[in-house]
Length: 227
Image 1: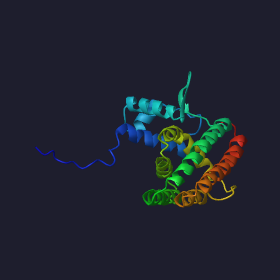
Image 2 (image 1 turned 90 degrees about the vertical axis):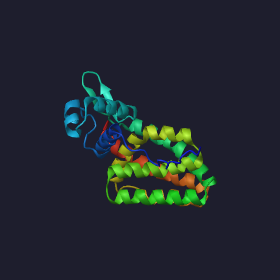
Image 3 (image 1 turned 135 degrees about the horizontal axis):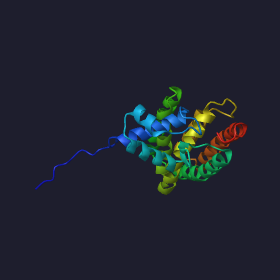
């Protein structure tokens, strides 16, 4: 008996919890909820039209991402970002992303190069349209291609856990004009070096990008502590 073939589901449909998580994550990254703001269940349920169970699950998930913290006597609040925390995130990114860019360049194929260029194009479109949610997803997709091409799957799991906080920092630094070169130029340099198979240039492009953004974050966070 022949087993009937079924079309593969390329992307499973988002669950209600996934959609609520995306909506609240975007609100925090975009600054709709400021650092230190309380996340009160009842208003969130009313605004989003979901149950308290979904809100509680979402808050727990965002707490694991470092976007929410639970304060005794106050409950969940939007996590504050200090320069000390940001510095550690940039240090982790430097180690993982330079290694991934180097390995991806060494293993680059025409298929991977095309996928990386397409991901960069989507990232630039989201940036130009000033869509925080779309930018979050497009940037994640760009780096996912790099880590996938490097074969660094465990490292990517670590980066994914940091992505919410990385996006908060990215949102903050993008508005600054005090940088060596625009963010899209850095991303283009990373993409070009990887696609050319130049491992040293790829690692250097990542390092320059992180040096630039870390310097901006240090200045901004030290001007306004614990934001």
